[in-house]
Length: 450
Ligand SMILES: [Zn+2]
Image (spheres, protein in one colour):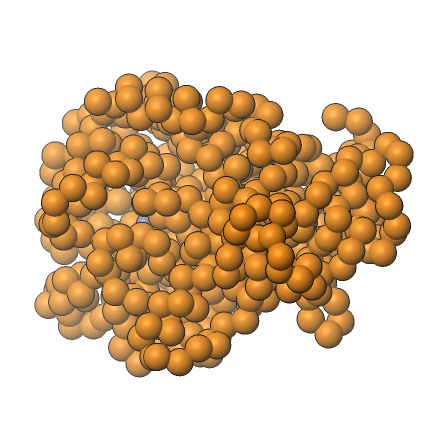
């Protein structure tokens, strides 16, 4: 990569004193450290030497919640009916077929798909740690290392949220495929996770799989591990009423209350889903400024329900977005789902502005993954952005000034034309430059698991 790269975007969505706005003819210069050194709107035609980007530049999308291997389930879990729990059985079968090499191939292709969808950073909620039956690999972090390497090969950033998973429900030992997830106890988890190394494109965080999977007495260990490192801490929360019922039966409190009592909530924490909450839960999450990561396309797919995102935001929670099970990978679909699901529930419109939804997918998403210096197109920020075509059948004809509204309410992953990460041009004219045959790579990696 040359020391300095200058891009010229036909339009860009930029921070502005009165609120973000679309500006024309924007020069974005990236320095050798991968950060933006200057953003100049109204700069006139594309100068010689700059890379011309037709369309609308947006900050890179942060996919705040991913389980890369769930991508292998796409469409196969759409046959017949079933529940979240029968879906989980199918997911466990795929998990059983993975080893570090196969996971590297699959995750590389999945992260390349994400890059093509405008995603510059992924939060990988990783719990598939060990070999079948629970045997340790020679490197006990071989699976996590494969994910970090996969992100490098796909040209995007990753926060590896190494996940503590110890039990198969309240008081039940892990069984079958879950043996691959468990380190035995939280101290052993902490010791293994401490050996993980970040990289320029990778940061390490922690996760509590759920209150089902980590006994209450061991939650504090995970929370402390993250606190000691100032690292992000993520947790699945109240996705299913059955989890709430079981937690109430075991502990007499809701999962949210249990997490609060064990130091899990707070500004570095993201609660994922938060679908079935009491009013008191909402106040606990908001009062602690815990981020809530909504995964609407997955929550829809699994018939979870509609989480109270608007209430949570009003209570003080930053909201982020994730594609979770990868039923689809489309950050624009996740963003519009937040508003459209709310419209269906309330039969009124206008709960979220397009700018608020873009912020959830960009600045707030990156902050929740421990990349607070990304998610904005301004000097000093990481030079991570995507460019949406404004001349496709979905986006053509809309006024450029309403680019945010076009992005959120009309565009999709297929409209992403360019992706730049750390100043590097990863997707150019709709083609991934590092994994050019992305569809073929996905087919091969998924096929290898059958
Ligand atoms: Zn999840």
